[in-house]
View 1 (cartoon, helix red, strand yellow):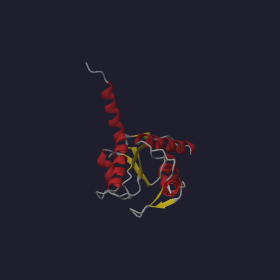
View 2: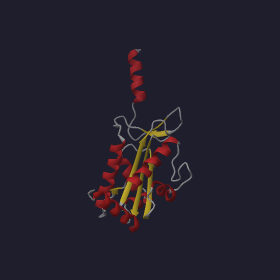
View 3: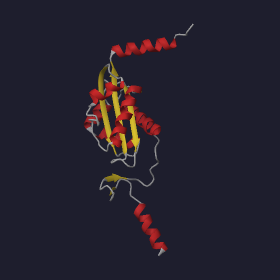
View 4: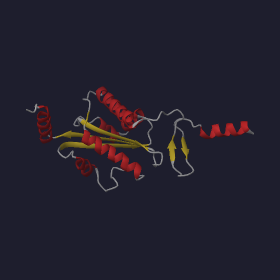
Length: 191
């Protein structure tokens, strides 16, 4: 009897990567993998940045630089989606991208764009998923954007468990002048 119970338990917890499993508690469907390494937020974000820039380079585009206000907006968005169990470009406060990103101080821009994803387990998977979607691919390969903020959260209590965001932007000349002025002021030695 102990041997049979051990086999049943092993079968119950073993899943085949890429095969959807229905979870009885929530009725939701997720994709699970037996050997998935739990990513830290930093590893997930760095992985998405690396893969995004590799794809952009392969298409003859410049690499994106991380911008802290875009990163704050992206991280807030994934946390909001996970905490409130939804997936949408409209946040829980009713804001779209054009209202949300400026609320994080990124308010002088020529272009902003957003990619969201949920459920993907790895940075490679999520970037590939975006590349496989025409509208997300357009955002990722947009030659007009120069900066990015990336957000990631993993919450086993959330509907899709893993949430990903990319907030893309290109500052306008007023914002660039302000950044140069601030950098110069910070670099000037105090007497």
